[in-house]
Length: 398
Image (cartoon, rainbow, N blue to C red):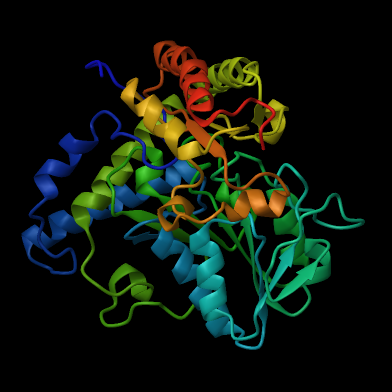
């Protein structure tokens, strides 16, 4: 294996953006920001500056809407717990294409169960009217669309864009529907933040989660945006940190790192989006020219995130392809960032009604260059051909 590596797994964790580590270093031994001595006040100022930076990237009405967490998973769990405590008899609306953190939190905290809208073969949920496609999710209850499920719900979840196939959801329409029904709406923006324009205030959502690891910040930090005026029961109790919304001494260094990443993302957002869209289109066009390779990512640029390509490969399992590419110096992923660790078929692809066992995800980011994409496209056909030859399979083999 050569010394040059090509990292195409930004949807799992993006490398630290420039200036993040340097911004964090002075605060690795920060004082408690809840104390009134000089050291505590300095830590508080750094924490609030970081909150301002996160709010600027995400279009918050006020930085007070930003609650720092240990990551996207905690933010999602906080949102789900708080909403279910607020309306214990209400069910949760959650599509099967949502991230496992969203689905499992909903199943755990919703005493009334979950209702799952069906999705079409691109993984897109339907808001209202006749069903758009097949592939209903296996939750406690199924319904054709969000409008049929929202009545009596404690919470509606809607991801901004899918973490595995990149499909953009009709998030503005879902938010409008939920708000009109008086139902809380949570948007998982972990894959969208720092990749496309996100405006929390203009969207009108009640809750939104992001992950530091996805935006090019440190691991182990994230944020939950809570609409101004909304009060929810905290998941963690004890002290009154984060204005009583999350107990525990704040991770000042992590928050500062997230803030620095958000500022860099804000400054470079449109340039990065244009570049990754161009590179992604090239990758999808060339990869699907290989016989027996199908794109599960939507064809139209306006219906997908700019950085995620999901490919179905006939005749071989995805994991050997991943390992073959890794030996060629290219890092990609098979399936979503959580489902593969359990060695289970992808629930996202199952809900879409496509092959859930043979998918490969390549995801781009702020470090991705043409050389990285070219390295993937050079190695990919040969890896597939060798594996098919070893298995005695062809491109038409199931």
